[in-house]
Image (tube, rainbow, N blue to C red; front, top):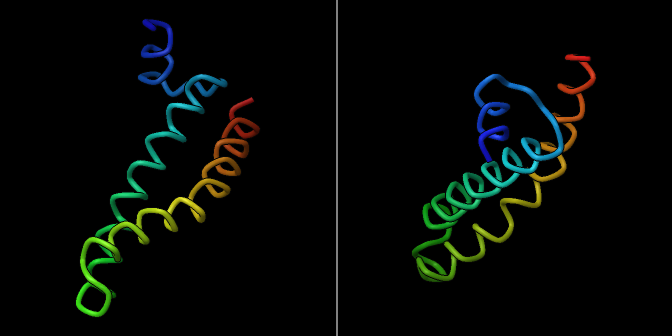
Length: 78
């Protein structure tokens, strides 16, 4: 665990730190998707339902982009 935290602090990208960054990106995109779903369609279909739909659809765009970005960063660093 200490090695993973050290790698995160110094910006080393390996499999474990890539997974940690991917999970962080998914959580942030789910929060952003829920907020934007409530803003866009909250009054029409209800705030809870629109937040749920927004949080489910938001990671569909971030997961491939995050994996591609980590792959490109890893190629640039090495």
